[in-house]
Amino acid sequence: MVSLPKTQKALVQEQYGKPLAAKTVPVPEPTSGAVVVKVIYAPIISYMKKVYNGERKYRYVNPLVPGTSAFGKVVAIGPDALLLKEGDLVYVDCYIRGRDDHDAGFLLGLSEGGGQASRRLMQHWINGTFAEYVKAPLENVFKVDEQRLCGSPSQGGLGFKMEQLSWWMAALVPYGGLRSIDLQAGETVIVTPATGNFGSAAVLVALAMGAGKVIAVGRNAEALSKLKARDKRIETVQTTGDLKTEMEAIQAFGKADVHFDISPAVSEGSTYLRAAIQSLRHSGRVSLMGGFADSDNIAFMKLLSSGALNIKDIVNVHGVFGLEDWEKGFDLAWDNGRLGDLVLFAPSGDREV
Image (tube, rainbow, N blue to C red):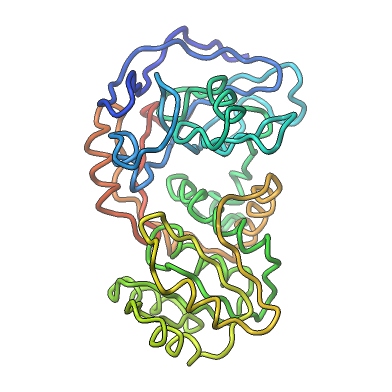
């Protein structure tokens, strides 16, 4: 068994909306139903600076160690862990559900969700992944086939860099939405809006799942052009704010089978959502994205391991920061929130346990 240190470095926010600080805090102890992971990489979501300065008014518990998902190595397990072992490379999923109440759930280190039950749950799992070590529920920790994903192609691997795997969450979110409405091979998918981190990921994930055509709708002409250049099955429509014009542009590519929407709150009043829904064929399906199911992580891992989604050609890591440089990391992430963009914390300062 690995001997854990007593203390670690972590980013801490003592009061809501106040600046974060790198502090020395206790290392979590393994307990039943939990795993302790040494964090190798934790992604910085592009809008995190707006969350933790209070601008986006996310609700969460303080004091807080921020940070959502992460990749790392298992260093300690509870007595009831059967499959995971020390040294395993794992993905830590950030959506934590109540074990006896699946209606309760929150985003680790980011948002308490809705209702008192979710808030109580967050108070129990208060420390996120912007730390050297994170303790997570057993069911939120998924073993990754390191040899297959990161191994040399000459030895049957896909040759992904470990840093690139941190794009997992950006791709998993739309994967869950598309899987929930049973996207089938050859179908036409409308994605709105398609130029942000999650929306652009949805376009490529839909293609990896077998979509015959993806109609990417968004306002940024340059981002749409770059997206279209990636695959001949991608068509693009730039939003205008005029419902009739947008409907005609979308329908020029034929009736669609599926509409995937991941609109932020700031898009309220936009016309593209109605235009996309009215461009579906009879019995078309719509995913108004809110989250993903427990089983989606395992299914997505299989998709990634198949090689159908080649993240080597998608993911661009713009910077890797230590915890002390959190402001630089937040600023760089804010400036790079398009397709495949990644900015990371490397809390442990190395890639090995």
